[in-house]
Length: 446
Image (cartoon, rainbow, N blue to C red; front, top):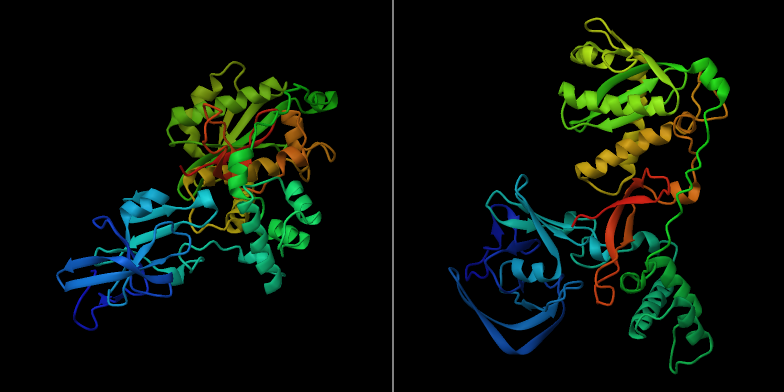
């Protein structure tokens, strides 16, 4: 793989080895042959001799792959760009997906897309930069943020960020003061460059990891809106419909109450009767705590195994099962609308594939926010079903500050506090936490 004295050996079963990167678990060094991927190529005082089945190759040059900390050997006589699994693992977290037979180089910690080394039919694991959204291998891209800025603005912003790092990460206000008062000689960075750097690159991640402190959580007030008396007097008895639907083969248990129009959704591990009954009991108890009584449950015939268990609950409701090959129209419509919302969220995410955990929270968040709107034919045009059943109203600052799927640096409090561990961790926002003080849930791939 490293070297061949024969011409035309840079192609392997249709794979152009000069244009892809190979991840090699048996190599302890990095060797590149494509000068488009390597910068600052210089002759070194030492040399590396490569022995392979193609002969012997002496390499005397080294270069830099932008974003890759270790210098790599370079020779245009080599036939492939090879990255050592050991060296890449020293800089990045790497996992192996046995189902897809691919290595994932995780780069969320530095705000970059992951690199997936997929297995070729020949058995080689390769990454093709030309098919990646980040086709410069390890180089950070903020192309979207750079739109609208001139080349001069971008160049100035990069200078400002470099100066900021050389000053050992001062506060932005102090950094601006230093420039405004001309306390640096021979400085060509302007205040506009600093503002542009903030707009393009955002707050420096290293600065976040070093300075983030624990913020005081919102107090739990225990203050919830009570159910209006007229609602209880006129609609105390609840007619509930329920069903099971699937999103990417993940089962969800969904319920909908008539008139109140309150929708709940729970992920379930399987479709066993005891699993579904456990989810139903949670919902049944929630209605009782809000002084509503479920008197009738309407469902498909697949819930026949639950009929005795549901009717056996204290003051248990009657279970009305639909005839064979028939469905409950209200819940079917609600599933259709829910899937439309879920699909819209999924296509708004910048990821080609997402883990099940994130998908579950996409589903629950989409359905939860649906209940924040009064429904046509519902019992109130001013009070949402969610407020009726939980006593809560939406808070833009608490509940809607982050879009699901947003890349964040989430605060993490290491121990001991006087150590040098980072105070934040790269994470993906997964929607609002359902406790009373609000806040967001985050997922870290680590």
